[in-house]
Image 1: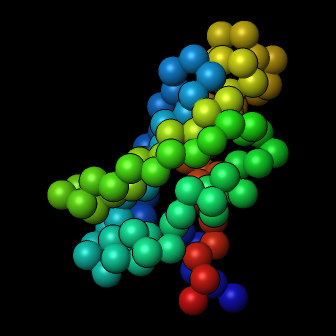
Image 2: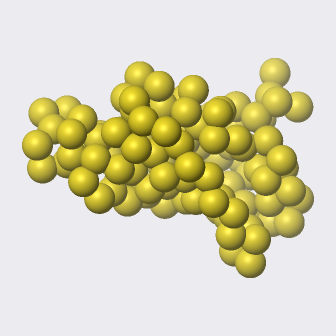
Amino acid sequence: MGTLLHTIAHSRAGDKGNIANISVIAYDAQGWERIRRQLSSELVASAFQHIASGPVERHELPQLRALNFVIHNALGGGVTVSTAQDPHGKSLSYLMLNIVLPD
């Protein structure tokens, strides 16, 4: 069935223009190894495909046991011009944390 990401990590999100920046931080070393192996740019792009049309970059931050994802074209043109309701911040973190990792 898989494991919901929120059971092994937490998340923080930010935005700049039409780019979402979402970090996934593992609760412990075991969770870090799992997200490092399984949480790919492709998996994140798939989860965000209904709102993001650009590439997804993944950056590892091993000292923090974290991955940072930069998701381009994800905010409906930018937070100040989008008519979408709260397409940034906590909403994007919640979407990220609902990704299911395979067992």
